[in-house]
Length: 116
Length: 119
Image 1 (cartoon, rainbow over the protein chains, first blue to last red):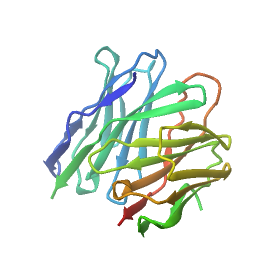
Image 2: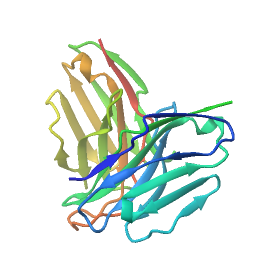
Image 3: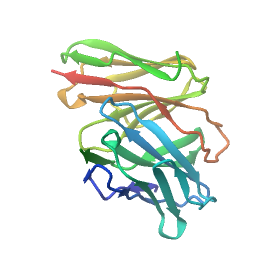
Image 4: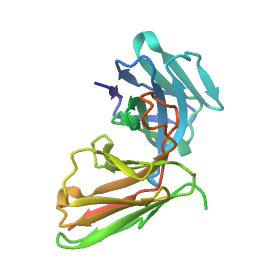
């Protein structure tokens, strides 16, 4: 069965520090997709990135970067020079194939607090 | 208006009330979802509609009743709820390829959620 683990329940950092959020997944599918979502206090989950299982290139988008390592089944997310606006709950998710399309398996989330 | 819109944002209801949550997506997607988010629990998938047909009911109690009249609208009808049903209910949509048996890369697009309190 598919499973996503985010071992860090809560993280607190001071503004401008770098922080890495860990994500480890389990799947028997050979083709799958990984996602990161951000949930600010307003409640809406905001899509940040998707990565397919055949593309292990790391990606950088501004202060955000993602490190996908298939060998360790990890898809970690790093925020560089964190800001107070980065405070949110971050979810890692795995997309699995079903007969109706796709099913998302979410991790439990990591609550990030960035202090001024 | 773009994205996924949910109404109401907040709802307080008694255990004997009947209410409905509404979700509307303006993205042209063909699949819609209801998720429940309780404190200290992972997101729980409740219902999935693909091409307006319910294809997944994740063992949800019958006091929750979904309705999908068209690909843009999704409702969740609530009746005789319990206090433990208090949670954030999130609607999402995506563009899927049903029946293909392959994982797609279409992300879920979420609404702001309805914060439900059952008293």
